[in-house]
Image (cartoon, rainbow, N blue to C red):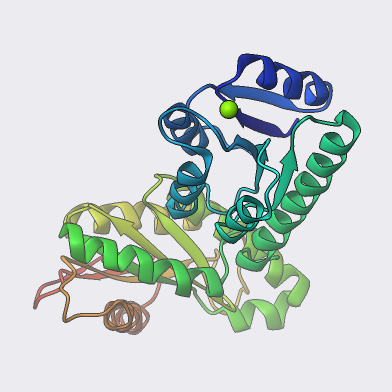
Length: 308
Ligand SMILES: [Mg+2]
């Protein structure tokens, strides 16, 4: 059931709206703009019905604040008011409200407008989800990586926290495809993606399919040693899945990983960090694959030695 937040200082009016919508929606009521702002940020709502005239902070002000919050800025807001003058309606719409309902309510119309905006919101969410998700693996795609990494990099520059970037590549993938065919290759990519992402579940972890059989991830807050240790576990987990590889190259499917941990500086760039991770991945391949090579962002490197 989609969730709707009603922000209205009048109990009677809020109850009226609730009764119109409660059969089909999960309704939460806030009686002040301050409560509304707080609930909007934590409640995962699909629509907000907002009264304009309230004591203290009014609906226009709250609407403006909601537009500034990343979490809720895409949630549609319908303004509710007895203000029938054109100027108020225009002001509300210019502030970003999707619709405007004037009192007294006609239940059928309120319901129809709410239904429409919920439908549009769900559709938009679906499109947004698809545009940032890799179809084969269900993890983030490259577009989402390019967008999100810049946001997170800037944040790490500001907070001065360790930031790790890593690149993954499935070893001898061409030989696998040549032996078992592309559909089987796709299944391996999906399985490896699942193993990697199941080990990167903290809210600050991010992993994406970078292209072909390549993945990229970033981790926030870990020391180089901790990141290196964690990535070794992921490499091991892929090997331990015992997916048979093309007999000509190796027994099981394995991955190579290159990474770097650094405290991001304003004069540095995410692209440069990614390039370092890619250079470490190259080293891992050169040293025999199925291993992790990690840079500490300065001169130091950690090399995993694996025995076959
Ligand atoms: Mg009011």
